Image: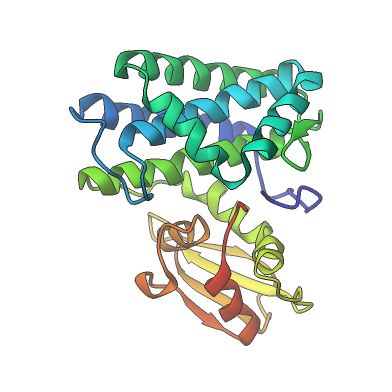
Length: 257
């Protein structure tokens, strides 16, 4: 996950919550209309049902962390005991449920998460994997995960996906999570500032960082989000990088461990 000590001033909880609801509704419409949830997705061994089960399980864990933070330690211990296969096991358990049951659980859970995050004071902390979190960061993190796993489903069914302004919050996560990308790759953290310029869905340019920064990343916001969520390789995007650190960032970009 992200280094939660980073500056999150570019994130907006209320905007992210509205976007989270819309993103969930869009994915819901797609999977509800698709007949076979056993269709494989780009994630090895994961069907459409696995993707939805993963989102439902994550929502359930968010609710535990917010409502009964003292019980979240058991969630952490279960994940540690399962090791690297925890997400696979959790998704498989959910995918084994009848489709109607899983769909109802996901719908109820995501609605409860949105409501719970809305009710929390923005800087109220609660436990998460390896850190304390706030609603200001969890809202866009949930948006990012729904969007990323939704992309797997869109790819699986071959459906076109229209980019929206919801990508801005995900792109901001990608920018503030730059240090995570270097840390995960075992690379030293750059000291120079970065400039990111991305073309939004309507052609406007969204920017982060000083305009005169030597390390620069440019391209479309959709491709940037696909890259930082590791849904596309750098070569499969329109992104360009100027500077060695910027190129290393694109090569290793991520917003989660």
